[in-house]
Image (cartoon, rainbow, N blue to C red; front, side):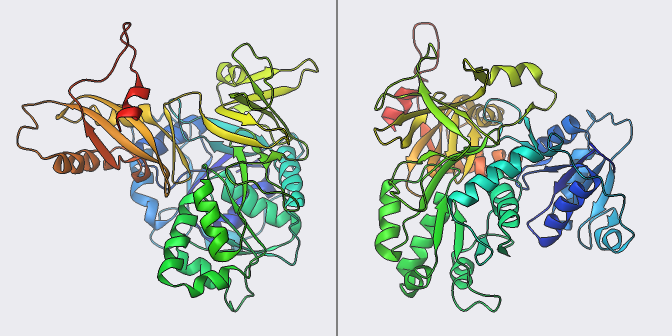
Length: 472
């Protein structure tokens, strides 16, 4: 593995992953984290696209990686080296490599790629966002400075390390500020509460989560009220990756006296908007631009809109990506430039800004993007998978507001009457979920089913999803 090579990592959260990350930087390589909830087809797309020199995996993900690498579309000039993070995974043993002689240190330049993080595939196959060392460091330094992180802090990190949220803020941000990270393999409310309660390595002071995690913490508090006073000892709780409802925010404040700090970001731009640590944190708002970033709301002509008027959110960021890997046309289409030539990224989100400069996300410019459980999900991708089931004649997938998930995935199905004559709706939903499980990650599964005689369309045959929203 050498300078500029990509190294893909498909493994559950562990300390070894963080060692891999900085080892890749040491060699001048590019770290490519892969969502561990992706199945073979999704993983294969990423591996074929980035052509890694090495693939790092664990025993839990071996079957998926083996299947992905065995797919016929692969035509590697040289097959990637396999590295095993734990026993039971194929490849060179990670422990043995770490114990060996270090390779030559290739100090990265600011403009060198640090990360190639694949988006959630909300508008088709996932795309690799190219992030430089300069972008990651500048954005994380600005954000963690705004949040007043210090080396005295201890972060309870239960977020996955394949997203910007956990990888960039949780690992890079903490490293920049010299703070301790208390790493959890996976999230559970009990484990988070324990981190704030007489932990042998020192109590956590900071927690980062997504709305689904905060909903789970509230459920835990209702069952065990003492947990509220334990969480009240923390210094800072933040939320991102999906909209945090004002109701959930207010409930958490009432029970723990913790005013969750909500922020906004994307893989392509890192974190661009945040509520302040010192100052007003508005429930339902994602805050003001982070130092080094700008944000604006524009109309369809590209003109900036005044306060209170909804439009598309565009952002300029010190952490903005170079572009999408191997996709120059899509890279160019994602940006607009101002009179000074600065690139602004078109987020696709609909927002309003108030008189104090606080932004609120009120929707999406595309109804085909669903934000559920901290993930951005392509409705179109789910529709394509479900349409292959023999009981489905037509299908449209929508996201419905949900206090726990942010949005709940509902499949609106025109069923084949012959194939479903003896099926109750609950049994049909179960059959569709089982079919879905074989094709896509579990967080993309429908959590509700609406049987309809026909899908609503306009005179030109265009699907009218807003009418399905209204009906549900």
